[in-house]
Amino acid sequence: MPDSSDPNASAMPDPQEARRKRMLYRCQHRGMKEMDILLGNYAKAHLHKLDDAALDTLEQLMDVSDQDLFSWMIGSVPVPANYDTPVYRAIVAFQRTG
Image (cartoon, rainbow, N blue to C red):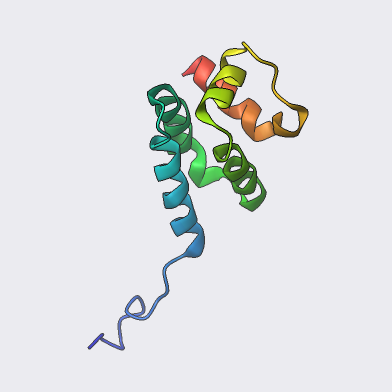
């Protein structure tokens, strides 16, 4: 039986923290090693700073195939306008400077 004097005993897990953990896992386990590294390193360094809107945008990027996303990131294919977001640009800048 939980100790009722412990304020953490009945505390619900933070849904935002759970969301960030799922996102980190998804970024690190894409399937294509290059994308695991690119997105995983970005997520590890920046997920804790992203607000809900930025997390939504990152989730949309996670739905793009590895091959398409990688092609955009290395510049061999232009990024579609609907994916050319501040979050996408931050990921690209991070991988170029990291």
